[in-house]
Length: 299
Image (cartoon, rainbow, N blue to C red; front, side, top):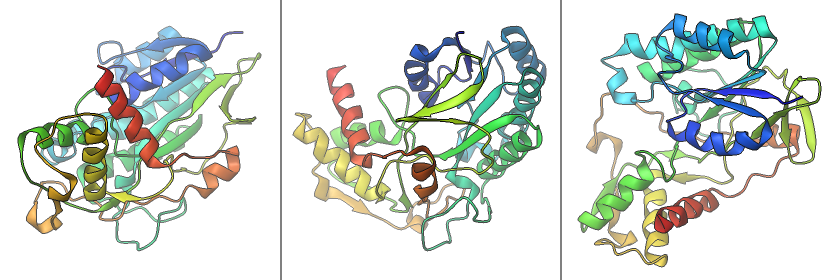
């Protein structure tokens, strides 16, 4: 029996990439804001009741971190309330929900990498609403898995990688705030012959009844500053013409670059539990950056 997978935010960066991974695994229903408006509870319920999916993948979110400080109501509707409504409708169908959250649920004051059991303390409206969404989904009673992720980049949409490339073509020097953060990747999911929701990683399958919130990251750590230098050097190695050399990308303090929403200074996430549970090997973060740059060059 074909697994029916509904994915939200199909025009977003994560949603766009997930479609390519999920399409071979079942019947894919990719919805943009017109198909499911996460700010509208009736739209959410109607879409799920109409399509009756086996799995709901929710990467969609209000991700304008600074704008959310002045638009908390919309951010709360999309990030805080919508996951709970999705969970309620999924529970009626016996469907699984795979939900994407963020490292911004932490305050970044921990010296080491964060683990699943660490206390949350979001600093921004964005972080607070994403945490509310996690809690609402968990309270819905549906089968669910929540991944905390961040630093989304790729060939589609606006992101830090593409911003660095643009500025490196225009300027002879850049200054980058250097807080810690890792990079992220996604998993594939499928249904078995009975339609039971499962996650498939490597050689093993696991029924998704996990209640912890694993970080889904690539291996290794970096900073915004180190990341920017790596992007510039890799782009040069691939033949890009830049006005800047990696040495001209300089670190600055957070105080020198004020923004409306505070960010966690440390966003490192421990991935041992994820790797052990799913017998999963996570590639180094540099692999994903190189792949994105090659794709951009090809386009």
